[in-house]
Structure formats: C-alpha cells, structure tokens
Length: 111
Length: 112
Image (cartoon, rainbow over all chains, first blue to last red; front, side, top):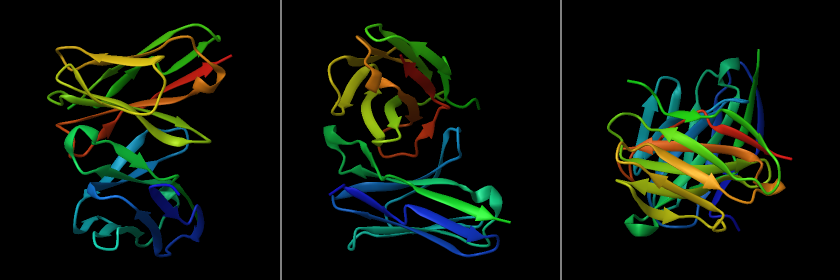
C-alpha cells in the first residue's frame, strides 16, 4: 500500500462544476502539499498546510490530521484548471524529512 | 525574484555515459531537493541539500549523486546511465525543510 493515496485517478468535469480531489496518507506528517502540473510543464505549489483550511481564489484545501486525510476543492471549474494535481506529504522532520508523493489526479475540464 | 532554473532542459545520452544536471535555486533559499518523475513510478525523492550538506537521500543506487555549492546552486550526477534512468528530473528550492517548495521546469533526460 502506498503511503499516499489519491482519488480519483482521473476526473472529467464540465466548466463551472465543483470539483473535489482526495488524498489519504498513512504516516505522521509535518506538512501536506498540493501541487499542480500542466502537461509538459513544470510543477507549481498550490498549498502547503499542516492543519485546518486554506483558500486561494477558487481553490480550497483542507486537512484532517486525525483522519490523515486532505481534500482539494475547485469551485466554478474552468478549462484552464485542466492539469494533474499531486498530493505530497512531508514526514515528521528530523534527518528523514522528505516529500512522498501520490500518483496524481488527472483533471480535465471541458467547456 | 527569479524562479528556480534548471539546465539543460533536454538531454539525450546513450547507455553507459554519465550526465550532470544543474539547478539554481531562488535567491536566499538554502535547501535544494531533487526528484525523479517517470510515468510508472511518478515523483520520487532523490536527495536534499542544505548549506552544502546532503541531509537526506532517497532509495536510489549510488550511481545517483549530487552536491551543492556555497551559492546554493546544486548539481546532480548520474553515472553509467541505464535506459530506466530516462525521466524528468526536477529540482525544488525552499528556505528549509518544512517550507513551501518552488520547482524548476525540469530536465528531460532520454537514455538510448
């Protein structure tokens, strides 16, 4: 079992729909990152969070430390949101701190 | 502020050769991490450098190595290239470990 599991693997939506991508992890963490990768493009960090909720524009990220679960929400989706969204967790500090990644969720938003 | 830069952007090598990739972090960032991305394995951590010291290393063979210079620029080297080393190699810089990471555009390595 992977340390970081994302669902769904693929998601197709119509423009304007509300989208949720889920991430579950099995280890104690210092922080969780949500990343965005466009086809052929580099990776952009969307959020880093260790508790609660963060919001940037139409994007909202939440985390429940007790349940080891995080969600990324996109409100009023747009075709330009089409990308791979990747969840990554950073372990509990110390010399072993590193990011472990989920396999990613491919989001396609149709006009 | 300039972002993270990586050179070269594309590289084609043959099996058995070695390759060196370069990463220049955002000014002021002292932590540089390297990642390998392949279609099969996704993103995997290679190693992290901070103030010229390797602080952590992922589960990769010794053919993969790196270093960091006093200006925080980092290089990674892969010796005796194998076909399976074909991947996108990304570096990311940050202030320190538990901080937001800023990724470079990556170097696409193809081994033939």
